[in-house]
Length: 211
Image (cartoon, rainbow, N blue to C red):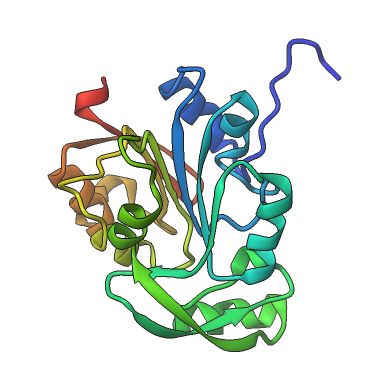
């Protein structure tokens, strides 16, 4: 291995910029649609540095991996959306593309095979953070990779209480020339975030208070 090289666990190298924006030795992350403690993980590098956090996934098998791989974290089996309820969840052989979104389910099926469908409870991000983030702890980093429900996850946060320094959110096919026309980008800009970069499908935002 090249001694001057750097290890990245993210699918597209997002954790490299996240680590630059969050250089502190310890902190607290929240990972929605966490998938796996290491594979395609935007929080694994922070975890390796000594951070802890809250990992949320609608796939119980994914959460079981976190109980083993990140036993010091808070690991929750639940879907996340803009209102509580129960939604149909498509679980594929490759859990990285699991989704609640019917359109994305149809899009993924030709390449990943027919999914197993189940009914999974969902809650708002704000409710989950109020319940599981330890008292007095600030959320430094929020990652959202929920395959089609990413805007709904952002919309369900309690922005009066939880304002992460850095947010990464999967926004597929974002038009960088007209980024502000995307509802997720518009929502974050309105709440004081600067658009700091695009790593293929992942958009990275930095709150002005953390600059």
